Image (cartoon, rainbow, N blue to C red; front, side):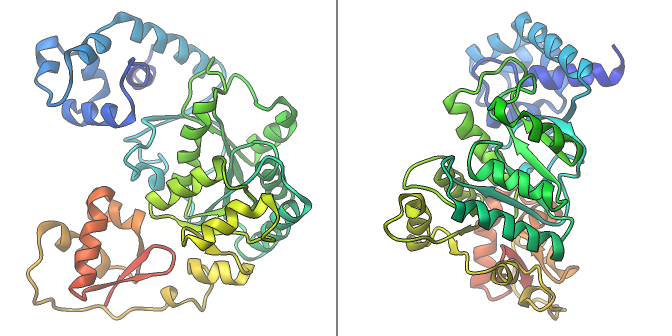
Length: 373
């Protein structure tokens, strides 16, 4: 194997350790510094890593881990699948800032995960004409106004597949996030659409080949759908289901969430109406309202130039100073970009932003953007 294959082997292996999830894997990687070094380290060296149990070290040193990784590497290379490791520069930067972001992504297709505007559309698998027609009309307007916007959904029945098909119809790139490996398409009825998406977007998953589309995997899939986007739109949903889970996750990531309202006696709109009533989603009023709230139109408040404060006579801690420095060279920054430019982890960033708002130094604009006062 070449150097690139060797590196990928250990990246895959990091995801194959029994009992080690994404957060633990990232902590181990941070402590050791290199994915290959993890598997070449001695037991004594691994024991020195804070918070790692002896049982976990047994699993890391289990030769079966590398054997499974070798099998997956063969599948990846044979099928020309692209991979994105958490430390890669082209890994989805919005997703990377989520504390439970996947360590490794598998992708079949051709698109840029870091375009300026990304919208995730989710909803019931038993959609109505109301929801389906909304998808088509909304994406037609979006394609006309912002033709490079990336559309993300889950390739499921109902709203998901209608969102993908409408995106393709209107020449918007679209990505389907899967709850299984790239050795299959589920549901199989959507195979032809999936093939078309590979040419104009693609299929993305964190799961290796031979992974079944089990129920729990769909919940894990939903965090990618939420984490990759600037905004999540819930089109139709009853009061329970995956769409509401996606909305909850998106809120936890401080993403913008919108819900399409419906009749109060329509079960398909019960979840959307509840999200709006509970202030967990903004009411989707119109296309123009949406892009204004996101700051994606020329007249929105957050696209206007904000005068920068030249001198600050307030004592700032290290994290606060990093945030102020990042904002001082930009009119405004999305929270994901701010985390990247300030090098303040997103789970620490929100408390820092709150403190700076309390001090009157920054302001929060619609669409999770921040600017200096």
